[in-house]
Amino acid sequence: MGRHALLSASSSKRWLSCTPSARLEEQFQEESGGSVYAEEGTAAHALAEHKLKKALKRRSKRPVSDYHCDEMEECTDGYVAYAMEQVELARQECSDPVVLIEQRLDYSAYVPEGFGTGDLLIVADKVLTVIDLKYGKGVAVDAEWNPQMMLYGLGALELFDALYDIETIRMVIYQPRLESVSTWEISVKDLMEWVEMELKPKAVLAIKGEGEYHSGDWCRFCRAKNTCRARAEEYLRLAQMEFKAPPLLSDEEIAEVLKVADELAKWSADVYAYAQDEAVTKGKKWAGFKLVEGRSNRKYTDEEEVAQVAQKAGYTDIYKKTLIGITEMERLLGKKKFAEILGKLVYKPQGKVTLVPESDKRQEIAAATAEADFKEE
View 1 (tube, rainbow, N blue to C red):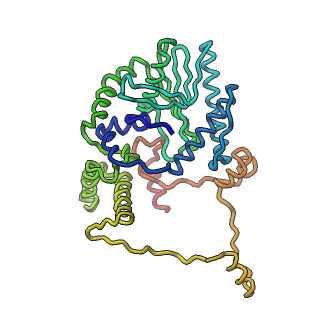
View 2 (cartoon, rainbow, N blue to C red):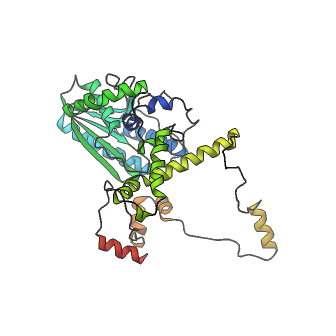
């Protein structure tokens, strides 16, 4: 596996928001091996790359992975179909567009030692399209002012701006498992203004480990998150407000807590996990805490032997049989067959009324409707 850039495109939201974090992270060892989600994403990207190369009549050997499944096949098929549509559109506007897959993009002219890898580039006269496949199903990612995509655009400009008359960078984030395709365009002029006003000054601070610490959703993948003082101070300040009875808080204070409630819960869980790991693996003693054996449930030593003994004793009604869940059924049949065979037998009940930030993409419901739904629960 190749080395990662200190100021990588994938971590750019973090180091642009919290410039000292890039150097701070160097004090912490990377976890050995990737998470299951990261490995699954790598497998999906490899499969998508293979399928896209075949669609473009290029040589490719199909990758093999334990993560391959019907869902991954459908998601990568959808990605390739979308990508080929964009290629055809480019061909209508330009006689010789360049299509690059898994292309290394160097933006070190603006960010020290900066580079990344673009999933798909379509380079044509006037418009340069950057497409990023995200296989995760956590949160939909918006392409608008997305620094990762903007850095990819800069790297692509470095390669092709002299050969093509590029005026616009078109950025697409394709998330098949969330049925989300986010698209945004920015002119080269506006992109370069962002480079001069924000990117370059913050990159200079980040490479030196200077600037101010700021906590936010970008802390999620930071290796320093468990012991970061800035993050702790911010959440402890908000936690102090949470310990008051809600009626004693001002509207502004409640709104401030609501904005970071999820992150506050994640932070406390991160700190607990870190402290427990230190105690278990390194014998760390925390004042006021101790290690104990947790509760556990009884288990059979050998299920086949249990079944034989129970049946021999005259007990036969010892097995349960249930219908598999909808998601598993859809994977088994495939989305098209599932819709044909079982579509009429599946319904989606109304979701629970939930308070969310205004940035959430879901449509707002009227207060009267929300009150009625809430009372019915």
